Length: 309
Image (tube, rainbow, N blue to C red; front, side, top):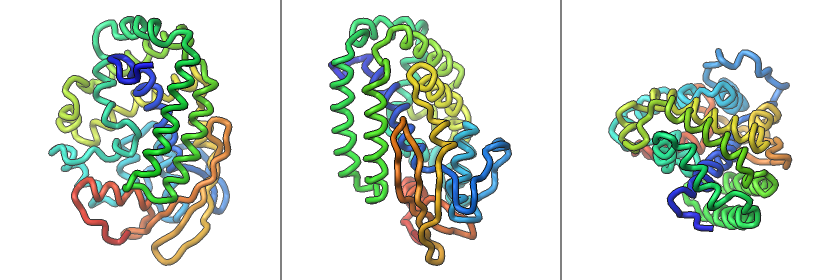
């Protein structure tokens, strides 16, 4: 299967961006540590984390609320958030988008979905390359699982804990993808139609590429992109059975170790039917707790030298 063909983003960028997005999202949410926190009322949850486990709670809440801008506000200290806003305007940073696999393909995906009659054009390509090609799709998935595992293992920006977590998530998502009806034309038609409309509604000019994000700035870009990504996740659930919200709501987090302003959390959850067990480091900065690796990458993206981490 020509994975780099003009329209193969359907599998590699659309499906797998959403699929891999799940793995990344799940790496930062949950429940636990002193009892489960109710999910009800998440729309009003805008308080920075006061306990180590809250570093995950607050981000989980923002994800369930489909609030990318709120996620960015609570994932890093206020001073760093202000630097990120400026860095978006000057094109130096795209954090937190670069926490997503295939983040660089997002403008290209939007552009492909925003052209007139995009869903019809994509279906023509789908029928010629993917419809009924279950064996080819399965082989592509297995290949991507291998490449994904190799990339994770050699990624210098990820910690060993992240490597271990990502390997588990890739295996879970890959197993789901092998069983999902990705070659079904009726499901693909609905997928394309709904996603195309969401891309147009976003108001982000995909043809402008990263300049569109720079013009809008971080907060406005995330506000516009959040409904699109929410639609992508909803379609993965409705058309292909991947229920990310169930994973988010079923997460359990416990504090395993704390020394001063450093702590470790244990995340346990089910992703695509498979149990995941991972360790996440958190750090206290200016009285609030944050995911350490998120803060470190955000600092790197604006040219800071990681200090207290």
